Amino acid sequence: MYTAMRNAMVKRVLSRRSDFGEARWMSSSSWWKSVEPAPKDPILGVTEAFLADPSPDKVNVGVGAYRDDNGKPVVLDCVREAERRIAGSSFMEYLPMGGSVKMVEETLKLAYGENSELIKDKRIAAVQSLSGTGACRLFADFQKRFHPDSQIYIPVPTWSNHHNIWRDANVSQRTYHYYHPETKGLDFAGLMDDIKNAPNGSFFLLHACAHNPTGVDPTEEQWKEISYQFKVKGHFPFFDMAYQGFASGDPEKDAKAIRIFLEDGHQIGISQSYAKNMGLYGQRVGCLSLLCEDEKQAVTVKSQLQQLARPMYSNPPLHGAAMVSTILGDADLKNLWLKEVQVMANRIIGMRTALKENLEKLGSPLSWEHITNQIGMFCYSGMTPEQVDRLTNEFHIYMTRNGRISMAGVTTGNVGYLANAIHEVTKSA
Image (cartoon, rainbow, N blue to C red; front, side, top):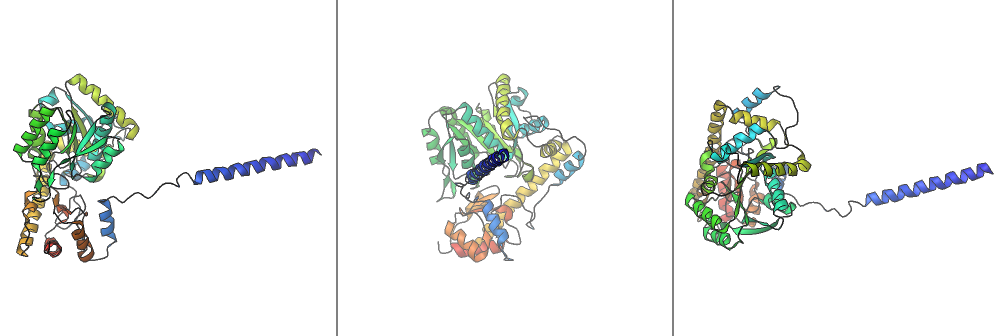
């Protein structure tokens, strides 16, 4: 009898375990049932399609990374030398939450000026970031935490990831006029009207130079007017500066908009990146800085930026920051970098001229002056999504459907083919 009771009890326990295991499996199997596939990134998706195309004639002018005239990625000589110097020279310990102090110091000099009084007075709260994207995201979260009811004004158009960044930080977005489709230039009147009509004390995202995706920048005089109107309205300017040096070849010239705002006494924010101007794309090296009233406020603000970074990524990576601080902290290496960034900028400018001249030689009925009027990595061609689709389907040329051409993908070997294809799809427009 005892044996029978024991066997019955064991059977009940095993049955319960089986029922529990089945219920647990059924519950866990449905946890992600509602997850839908994410839409493809409009920029990265272009590269995926390009790589899958077997055509020997294919051309990729969608990628936002520099290529040499053979269409190959480039590692700058200054970067190779910096790598050689730092190899085996340090431990792999964590950086502080705010990142490399030396890298941040050198980065601030590029944006605010080599002999900036603001740096000397310690009025700038700054931390190393995960390139420009990370700097923008860190600022968006900072904005949400300390101005929870604020919104951000973003230009139309802008780099597509800007919208994702502020959306995921739960910051409301508004837009302001920027690009004029008919002139393929700046809609300065519309921009100024939107600045004037925005509520006092609004946050604005500004591209410091080489606007992405249009390549259209305000003139120096226009920047002065923009700065003045920001002062009147009490707006906060947040500059995304992803292309300093890469636009004109001169880092000082490319920082002109920021210097104008500083001269006018604005408190500003800046996102900086070394992806384009040093070719450190995969190293994810950047900086977020906020100009404060005084040193005490800067210390407080930096502490909050670090606190936001802690649960995000704890602290930034070491290697890229070591390369940047080595290059900018050594006079010879810095001069080499300045020469190399000038070479990159000049190649892009030269390809703009070549593309425009090739289109004109083909007898295009359209004006292509905007190709050389625009600046930086991208040319906003003015082509429609349907025309871009024809370029892809008929000529195996890949770019984003908004007509943005990455001039880095244009070479002396493919510029004639690209021009001919553009002429064919636009000649009846």
